[in-house]
Length: 109
Length: 109
DNA sequence: CTTCGTTATATTTGATTAGATATAACGCTC
DNA sequence: GAGCGTTATATCTAATCAAATATAACGAAG
Image (cartoon, each protein chain N blue to C red):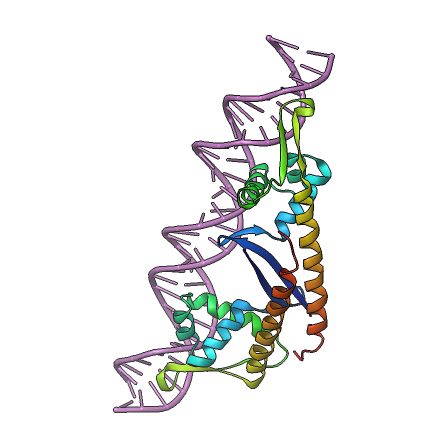
């Protein structure tokens, strides 16, 4: 028996960043490509693009720098702001997990 | 911009209790009827029954006392154990929300 | 100027899930 | 024993969501 959690941040009532989107951002950062990131996460390119597009629509600062065409067909880089989103969310998530594990031990189920 | 969370407890890898199930249990406790609880939550009886059945299958102690037939066709009562599940989950959930609100203020998004 | 792999986008198909419907058992009440 | 409203369960339909497919634009490189 174990406790699970999912947290996310909303903006204007719409999901802004959460577990899946941050995971996707990390893969984009690692591969420098939306399509490559989608492939490693076994997700359709369309879905990945939609998720990233929602993030950028809601974000006040640019999250991605995209290059269409050119060397190797192009690619996508994650901005410093995007990287800070990843870092902040992951620490927040880990803090939450630690907190819940401690609380969970107090329960009698 | 606001932070949201969902937490749940799994048993044998399957969801045991979470937000929706606890909400349903509360309604059953209030109405003393699965069908009435399903109606107020705008959920099909089948779905409500399935959720409650999963809870009881995984729980080590009885959560519900069901009466088929009889006065008013029967009904369902929540056991003391079931009520303790409700109470414990709700306090845990509220503690988590308070914790996250505090953590959230530290972030720069 | 052709090739390449990427971003970008619409459309269509498929699968999974939720919902509606139907039916039976049950036991108290009248 | 007929009626009632509930629990219990199967089956069929609808709707939603994910996936696959198709197509175009793009720009560096050879």
